[in-house]
Image 1 (cartoon, helix red, strand yellow):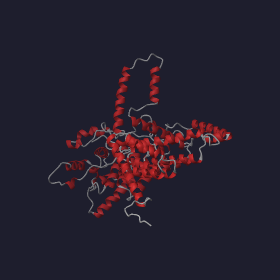
Image 2 (spheres, rainbow, N blue to C red):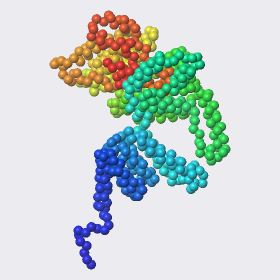
Image 3 (cartoon, helix red, strand yellow):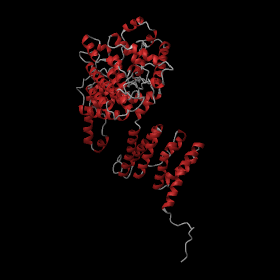
Image 4 (cartoon, one colour):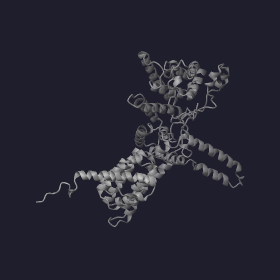
Length: 592
């Protein structure tokens, strides 16, 4: 029997050769990306993608999905055409393929979120095409009903859409990419153009045409900022949805049951009619109800909670709180999405107490939470206490009492340790977050604290002077506009004297050979107040009635400013007319 030469290649492919082929394929996927990046010629990948679409085996397709997943860092906007064509390949026909495809898609939109819209559009297109093709499917006994395989295919597509939504929530993404500075600039430009049009407008001839046009524009305003307008529309829809859920209004009708059974269709029409009557009976989504003895405090919508579906409202609050904790709280530079929770709390003010307690206990006072999470939690507490008209003064004072008590326990601990009893932003950041919130809220709602002698005694019970005089020196670490306004108010009502310390802090900012870098340290407190003024035009009406604007500082402060002899001390005071606690520092104030 002749011996086989040892150098002859075996007729059956070994496992080693299989791995070698996969390695070559991986190199081919990577090389395609680099070739297309250099040439921008679709013919580079056209033939390969055609094979994957028509004749490639399941294993080959899975291999390509694995390769493309590994190459996700290379799939930037320079190769967007390649990515979009790759997504058009039918990956969801088989379950095993769909798992690999979903893994690739999730990695893609997580690394490059600008692909999110294109990916979702492709998935929805596939679902729409499937539903339309199922209408005239001869295999089905009844038109409009999908086969078992089609239904499984559809659910795989829906599963990927849900997975994308969990990883990259669309609303919040638009919010982050729509900075307040751009919206403010566009609003200012629109105001100036409106004034010009008003002067150039022809005189009304008496038939009311011009006034009708004005009313039509007011009813459906459109923002010039593209992303801002998109976010505005989405927020308007979500506000209306929250209102409907809280009032037990369900506008969806089960069309499938109507087709199957005429009796169910009749019953469904009855339910729809009852739902319509109920929607007419409940209050308007933008309505408001004020407290009987307090004209400035709101107590929900017009129905006062009598028409609320408590079970649905409780479920919605639980869901929104979960989304807030997992996404919104940890998102930097979000300006408007958080107002969905603000609106829900305004509709049902009793929930605000639970939400504030959750932020304080579960987030801020929890040492296991990240520093940024604790910072943001305290920022939400402060902004909600300051801006929410639906939060009564008694709750505001209780919250400030609790926060101040936490600060005093922190100071007691530092006095005991001694080794860390000095100002340091990184070492004592939670303390400074809490102090800035106290300064901000107290200044914002000082009028309520100074209405009468009884409430002024409550302000004195906060013992704010201990915070001001503490060795940790919060006046130096907190934002300058907040410190200046707080100093002006507390000086006016003799609650604390801050200007001497502020003057010393100002001298520390001057470079000197006797002061080293460690002594100066970082004096910028990275903190924001998330419920700063709402800038979206169409959806602003949902929160406007429940939202508190800053009334300004006492006029006496401006008049007494002339009596301050030190010019440098005067420089530290912010005029109440120039500072309105609205826009600026990250975001919330005019820049110092």
